[in-house]
Image (tube, rainbow, N blue to C red; front, side, top):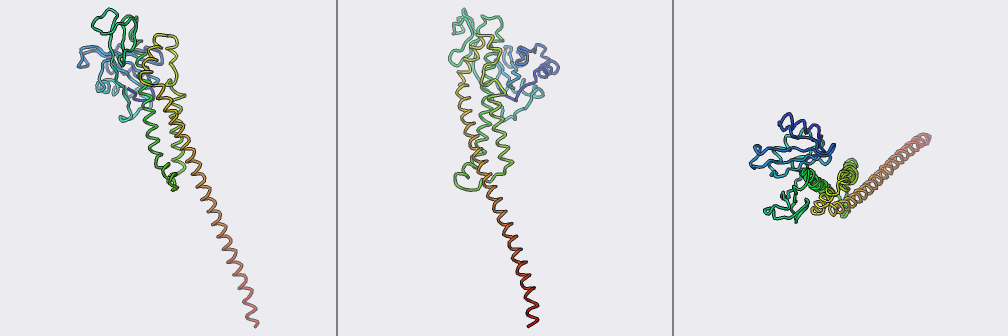
Length: 295
């Protein structure tokens, strides 16, 4: 579940320790991920639940929690640890099934030596020293998808906001927008492109997984299942279109302003010529008046 631009992990752990009394909350990967285990007494389920807080992506992932439980037990208490909070309508979530299995467990339905994905199900093998790291790799992939979804929705909102402007342009009507608003729309696009390609790990594998081939494989597996690479490519193409549209609108608005300025100059010249004609006629009548008196 993506709730903000990023989390202040130190503040999040402080809240979990001091306000919720969850003393097991700790940093799992410095500067990247924190982990906390919620006891079964907090929830309707009989099982304890792992929650991973991904600082840089502003996401939380609950293993075995419903979305309503995540909002109540995790998202709301950690609001003060958010940086760049999203509104309730902008929060994106992703649900996937998982099982914990071993190669000797006949009830698991899966015969695995390592953690993997079977269909759309994440399989966490307990044949590993630290299954939390496996969950962290899967969680990073899930967070990547929900973070991408927030950018997709923001771009769709931008395209909806500019649709009428494009329609006006196509119909030869006035754009009906001021330059300051157009600059704001340009800034929104630059922010979206920056968050997608520069200021996040959406388009590249986090450094941690380069050092852990098995974790990198899990991260790549879930990313492929969620079509992350395809969605990034489509989003970039849409951003290219949106940028081109804004540039055309800016060019047309500049032309409109240029034409308006030219007409203002023409009108001023006409007024000046009118004054000169008036003064010329006035002087002519003044010269004619003495001549009439002499006659």
